[in-house]
Image 1 (cartoon, rainbow, N blue to C red):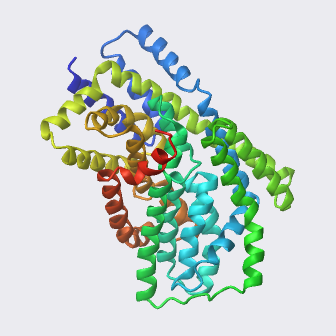
Image 2 (image 1 turned 120 degrees about the vertical axis):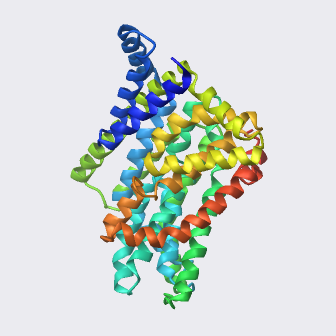
Length: 433
């Protein structure tokens, strides 16, 4: 069977099942099995598929994923989110639409700790949206700000997205990826803040004023233990004191300790956190497992090479090809969550980008930035639905309000793509590459 026909079968079955609302992990397995059966026997397909699914999650590094999920859920319920918002407000009181600016900073800070866009959107939106309603904010605008800034946590470390990418690629330092995510994540947040500022100034949104020094000191001291977490976890991983998985375990213990000190968590809440974390981890790990089977089918069928040759037949210009890859990834992000997208499309596009002289660390940042934009894009954007659900705003109103944010973030994405130094300057300076 030709590679073109195999490719059509794989993706046609996959997207057909998605259209029928079949869970994405199940869709991946079924489409992979059907495609493999076109060239192999049932005994071969069943044996190899199970083997690849098992080996796909046999990784010590992947243990960091459920641990960071648990840490994020503890933060979300342990009083840490509220302290992040209070701290963020200190820097935004003199800016029009200061609550929106505090929302962005809060998402950047909390997202960096929790490593989850959905957790950040939920925690920040749930805490700050009632205050915005009281101050007569346009809630479609407020919701859009929260949605557009929540994905910064997927770039600013520690983040499980880079851990998954590192596992797929193999041989790419998690420390280098973590350090490479800082500037792109900050640029993403700043881009959202600029758009929010222009809108707030045009609509004459009020400022909250400067916080008295005594109050500012109290808020800073209250939030300081949470910031120590970043120093402990990131410093420990980059400094080689412990691995990313061990750092995730330290993160869980520290967050639990803080939540107990803050008296924001009891045994009943903790048991619910454990159950929620287990459910989320199970979903993600099954996605990773099933995607390993699809990756094998694609590699066996020669699909990545066929797609690479197809792109190269369009153009051999590096900048044109990188633009096309970004365009494809943006479209993928509209229909697929970040974890399966990383698992499925990294083996396809990374070899092309490496052949063009792109560093794997740089490609990881570009890939995840694309998925950040996709997470807030209809029809499947998880952050979009969470953000709208919190404020009870319609998708139509919020999507329209998100348009200027999309334009700014796509512009930043292109700059990051064509200027690799922005992503690589920190890991190179620290000798991680």
